[in-house]
Image (cartoon, rainbow, N blue to C red; front, side, top):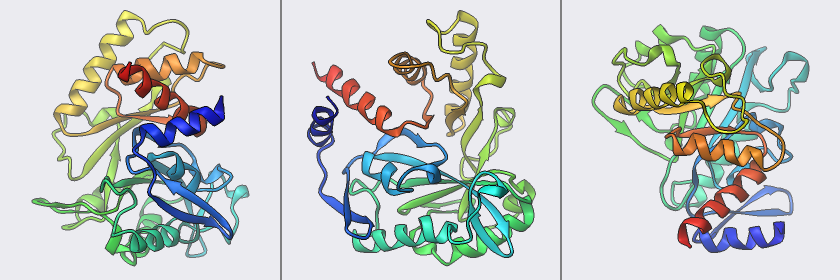
Amino acid sequence: MKHLLRLLTLFFCGLTSVSAQSAPGVSISIPTEPILSGHSHNDYLRRTPLWDALSLGFISIEVDIHLVGGALLVGHDLEDLDPSKTLQSLYLDPLRDYVREHDGWVYPSQRSLNLLIDIKSDAQSTYEALLAVLTQYSEMFTTYSETQVQERAVSAIVSGNRPRELMMAEAVRIATYDGRIADLGDRIPANFISLISDDWKDHFSWRGGGSLSEADSRHLAHLVEQAHESGYRLRFWNIPTPWGRSVEKVWSQLLDAGVDLLSIDDVDAYRDFTIQARAARRD
């Protein structure tokens, strides 16, 4: 069945005309069109960080960083950090190499890849170090000013410990700010906040059994409307993840309600789900 779904991937996605070296001697293919709802949660935990998500067509990738001794190390907790696993070595260097070799884009359709960088250490010092690093790769990053957005291959979004005032003071930004539901209604420009992210369990009682309750459905519809009216996309983490095919019903209900990005741990299962959904729409 998985072999059949992989073949369907090539058929329904238009298929894949570009490839990259994910590791010495290992070649992968990147679909021409990304999965616009796919967010690779804690991507650095994958067998092959970055490339697993890109080979499946994910439009969004999440990386946790800590500032340690001047280096931006990738990982969720301090005890998990490895000095060899930096933001540059795992993500920025391979992305820059790939973009340079493929006409300035990750995806041939010229859809920008979202790189959500979750700051786990001190907000200001880590952001300042991050800004210095991202500037070295400015050729591939989308930039933002009061009057213009210059879209490029990768769009950085700062999450976690975010130095809001510091970022707002920048005349030209190389990253946007990951907002929260509390920011809805504050009329903050979409060139500062491009994404609203929040913990599902803090706002809804539904845990994945059956269908969304009427109260949760109304509340979700209201949040989706607020976000979209302001030009933001909406994402939740801690979405219900029941066992087996029940999780596909969760994904379907959230997407049908207008949620833009789903934080996904099982990227292969989500890719298969999108293939089946596209096939069903064609029938």
